[in-house]
Image (tube, rainbow, N blue to C red; front, side, top):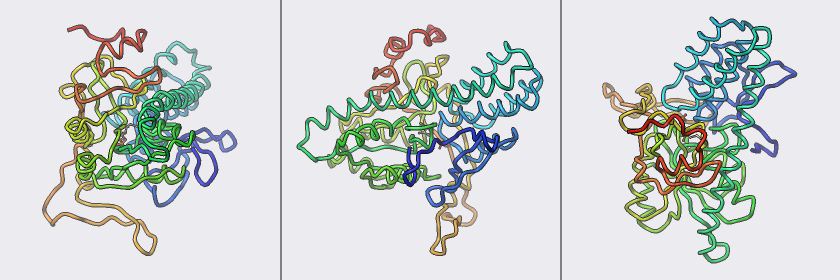
Length: 369
Ligand code: MRU
């Protein structure tokens, strides 16, 4: 998507510099800075410290990290060790494992002298596929927005609510939850987006920044405001992203998503999840029991980051001395609260049948009860 009129992806290979470039999301929405990643450690830190974040982008970053390492040392030993180091960076988003498994399987069947170039080709493939998947999620989600717009008077906006950042910054481009919004905006369908703050890390500010860059009407709200807005008829549609969706349609996403789903359910508001197929974990069905939830540093809760009047980015403590925060980073929304899954192949019910019908070739890993 565009930043100051120039098109960017969130990760790319700069052939001139012979380096992978990423947008440092730790500094957004305040500063737009591009950094390079080269060593395996650079990629590990970028994922762990959340310079890059969002399930699809984590997968693409790991693929590039593995590829750069394969160019230095294509041995089986290095492949195994690099895989192990990268997969340990974050536990919840399944795209990380999906991308690394895909690369490892192909590289093990590639001769040593070709591994580096093959690994780079794979990283490019994974990135380009992500863009295409998300573009199609946008087109499929657009139909849902159009149907709501058709029931409104001209110029009355469709009011969407989203949680966290499932935008282009969380993917290689387009975003998942935001892609239908961008498609609608491009067609001049009026929309307004309620952007959840998403404490503790305030990824909602990334969404607000993205929407502002594209000129989409939006307001930033506290995480607690969504239910109230829904009760007062101010939300037509909720679209969120996902870090891992089970074969039965349970959705694990940024902490607080479940509460939005409950409020949407109570108020009869459609709650959709934008789901790229690499985010489906076909090996599990019960998200609450089976998805590992990342526990992050308590300082993300007991402190808050922002830019002060002098322009420097500061962290301040918001809890009393001696009170510690607890920081589960994701929660699971059971399939029964999900109106539908917006995938690159179409919209389906959040169920084994719904997903299997859309992805018969991928569903072979589904375990029977
Ligand atoms: O902790 P983060 O910022 O990596 O969490 C991101 C999310 O939860 C997104 O909603 C999810 O990855 C979907 S991204 C298209």
